[in-house]
Every structure is written in structure tokens, then in C-alpha cells.
Length: 146
Image (cartoon, rainbow, N blue to C red; front, side, top):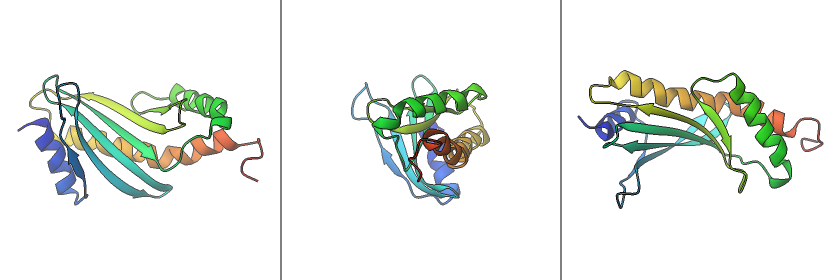
């Protein structure tokens, strides 16, 4: 069973609607995308797979980005959040303010489905749970929330 088959099985087993975007050339990765309604807002999930090199990257994108005028606070908040992290890291793109929660995972043949499932749910939980405190850290004490 391929890595893509295992990711498909995760989405199907959990009855999650997703879109599969196969790579169009050797410089791209296959991609699965799904939308989620979390407890703290909506977010998009993207799972990128590399069958040949046996790894995957799971990325959660909350439905908010950091405005350019708050970029310094956003990058600082991501760094503070990541200080206590081992697995899912928060990134802020300084060009457009996009926030992403990322986890990379090696998946050699024989990797159990449960490992892939836990990794995907871990990114979902971080994206949903951590985004509220991240936003508070970005906008706290500077009048943006008033």
C-alpha cells in the first residue's frame, strides 16, 4: 500500500471530504486538501506526500493571517510558541502574513496507519487549539482588538 493510499484511507475512514491534487511534474509533491470547522475557527489542512523519498508534510492553515503592520509581533509570537514544541511548529510568512502549523514525518514502508492518523490529527489540534492564543499574542496590548 502506498503512502497516498494510507492518506486517502485516513480521510475516507473519518468521512472527511478532501481534494487530491497529483503532482504535475517531478519537482512537485502530491497534495491532499481538506477544510475543517474547529472549536476556535475554520482551518484548511494540506498533506503533501513524497512517495519516493518516503516522507510527508502536514500543514494546517487557520482562516486568518497576520497583517503586515503586526508582522513583528506575529513572528515573535510564533517563536515563543515554538520554544516549547517538539513536533508541530508555527510559521508566519513575512511576505503575506500566512500562518501555518507544520509537521514533517518520515513514513517508510510498513508505517502503521495509526502513525499517519495521529500525525494528521496532531496538526489539526495544534491549528485549532493554538491559534486563539497565537492571535492574542499578536494583537494583545496594541489596540488592535479594541
